[in-house]
Image 1 (cartoon, rainbow, N blue to C red):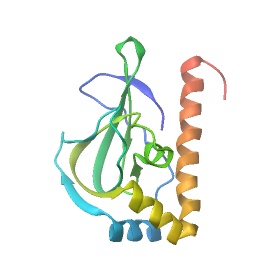
Image 2: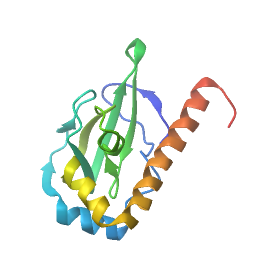
Image 3: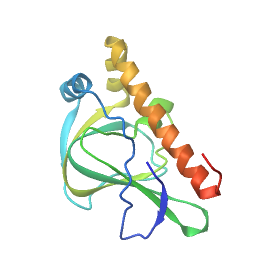
Image 4: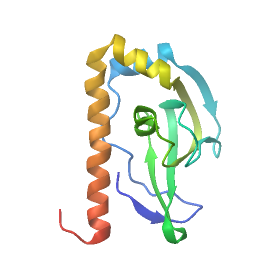
Amino acid sequence: MIIQQISDSSVCDSSLSEVLADTELCEEIEKWAAPILKGAGEILFRQGDGSDYAFFVKTGEIALTMRVSGGGIWGVRAKKGSLVGLPAVVGNEPYSMTAKAIRDSQICRISRDGFQQLMQQNPRFCCNVLQILAAEVHTARNALSRLLGVPT
């Protein structure tokens, strides 16, 4: 996830995370999740909304953007296999970004309660979720360092 300033009409080509949900976690989420289709341009959630759901990108691509001070917009892309909204759902915080389908996408939407039950019933999936969260933190810190001109 390399965060860079973008215009409202574009999204940077950087990934949310290079670590994706493993095959077993993907299959299990699909069992617990309500499948939804989002057409290009449709919103999954907005920055500041309450985080009731995490989203698994089964097909397609999602743009995640964040409005920052000074009117800037920062963004990344979530591709097939990505879990979107995970930090907010795990932390029980509002979404920190807006998620919008870049192209027609098949999404699996899992409630916070369902996600917690899935993790409790399958503790080994927690390791994959932690890896995903750690990768997001790592790449966000690297991006922040580059923005501030600090060598990594």
